Image 1 (cartoon, rainbow, N blue to C red):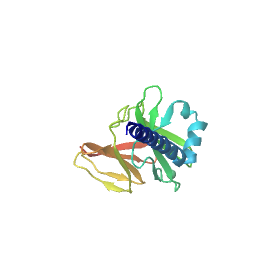
Image 2 (image 1 turned 90 degrees about the vertical axis):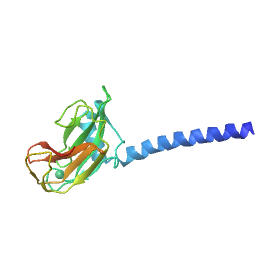
Image 3 (image 1 turned 180 degrees about the vertical axis):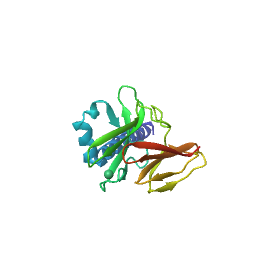
Length: 167
Ligand SMILES: [Ca+2]
């Protein structure tokens, strides 16, 4: 009986390890090639690694309005383990880093608190947390902490801005 228990325990442990390992490789190979290559080309792979903790683990949308889909993906600054987001304009290969050691308005230098995100459509946004409305011209990233706060990260034609939506 004890031998059966030991065998089952080993099998379960192996399965858990295999799932974790398999998940890692599935995420790694599911990361768009242009993201991985851009990070390598710009030597950003020496500073950051990708994080796969958000669901979905990356977002695709035309964030800068050039009719080419861009990618947003969570990252970890290697030296500090701080979480952030990278947005890659795939048409120009520009990379924008928020968090991961760099504070950006609501987004602190460590965005480990963020747990929800999605792509929002262009339009006029007005929240009761802001005194003004904002016209978002392109697809934007809605990001925040569940049941806490969040907002829109959007491109205004020249740079990224933040618009607070919930608190
Ligand atoms: Ca684009």
